[in-house]
Length: 267
Ligand SMILES: NC(=O)CCC(=O)C(=O)O
Image (tube, rainbow, N blue to C red; front, top):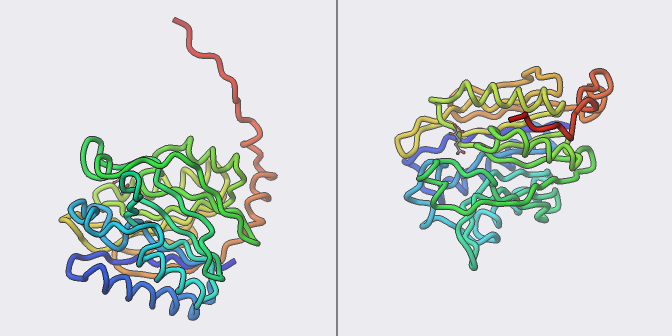
């Protein structure tokens, strides 16, 4: 299975509408050129993950303009498309940071509302609601497990996805350059501890004064980095072998040694 991650440069000089059109074209071009079966985009690439001031004004209903543009792009290209995330406006609730996955016929295969919101007592953490549901997507070749950016710091979420059958974690992000080493380390850690592929797609450029880490990365179930992007806009294409997940788990069956019922400390 061939996967292409499109690391988008999210800069303020480009309007949301222009970026949406540009990214729709890119999805079609990349899928055709690279012959990808799966294309992945980053977190909140319409606004930028740190552009807190524009979350409310650019929020969309689930089936809003980004949904429409991405479903058409997936269908035209005939690919599985993880369209990254959008600021979603729930008519009966708060905003959510919602990832969208489309099948090659342009149907919505899954929507995942980010569970761990970033910002402590400001930013996304106060402007958006928290999702509560783990989401996996079955494709004909593998099962994807969905997570978004800051979720990467919470290993229990990923164990939950493994227990639900995930073999490939897809993690769109808008991670800042200042913590790039955490990003790379955590992507590899999740791959090694859960013996899965990790496809982690970030943003480049600078928005809201926050230079982005870039360095999208694909890690195999042994923790080897198969490809890593630089800082700017870039496409990473990698052939992944879903059978390698089972092979790794058979060769080194650490997941079987999990202790599920440990005693609490005394005292
Ligand atoms: N958009 C995010 O979730 C940012 C996460 C981050 O900066 C970090 O975990 O560090």
